[in-house]
Length: 450
Ligand SMILES: [Zn+2]
Ligand SMILES: [Zn+2]
Image 1 (tube, rainbow, N blue to C red):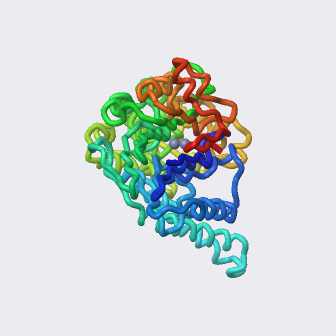
Image 2: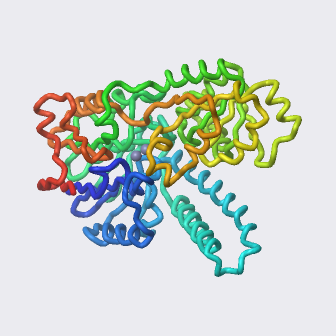
């Protein structure tokens, strides 16, 4: 059995890990490098990278498995040869398809602006065609993706040749994320993907490991928060802080992600308890809210038992503005809504207006991030009253320690999805477990860490 970490040892995201027996192999995640943090590859470079991966080391049975739908884990799925089967959770597939549908609608609208261009040769038109093509390719790949059942169902087993994979549900900052227990050539490997225990659904982390994983031979864990000390805020505290902020201001705008189910749950909960009017500016967010409401599992759908008002893209009527002015509101917005927010917000008293920034602060603090996507800092620039209410989607140091102790790996512990200068060796662990941590750039019999 061979484990190869192709990418992700010294960077957060862009993860690609391969686990192979003599007849079969699985790749876990095919992530895109994060914008602004890592080298951005050209289309040709991505193509070449994946061609090399799939042409080397070929096996009779091959598959790609995705832990969750963030682009640093699924971003390169379009480049996977279509002869290779790909798997993801049903929730991941549904959300990614919704996202692509909204992108497609945006592209269709953009098409009208090419009518005055000088035909097919215009640069903008070519760029647009490229975007259309990659949207279509991604949708085709998503449609072909096999899925396993949604949340909390008893784990299913996926068989890829002689490799058995059990997806185990985890709490993360996106809907329907999973860890994988992989059984191959007599070894049991736990691949955590991105996870945490401080979300609404995080409490099941250790019981799930207890019940389905037990002791493993090898653990591959994420280490995003390794260089950050202290305990992180729970999603429940996020809810309480949101509630307090909503009580203080009449017009509350919240900048957040459309796919972060637990954050949206915290917001909806706060809206319900303050009896505010919930208005949604983002079409994708409106779709995901409806979707979460329809999820079979009551533990999720109960948070979304609320009727948000979808603000149409055209300028709101005077009657609607008057209603919103009198009633007050909580408005959900995304980073791409700068122009719309600017347009509408003039109608409301700035002193009674608050922006709750509920996303990673690096998006507006780091110059490299702003260069790639200025939406977050632009939206912030429109407001005088701003409060940051957010918590990480990743396990803190203490949680990683607990996971390591719980699965007590017999042979090796590998840290991925972590900063270049951070290491699992800095954790507070018994010496016998510390000795099992594989240093980066080391090759063992069956584990190669590049
Ligand atoms: Zn990630
Ligand atoms: Zn993630």
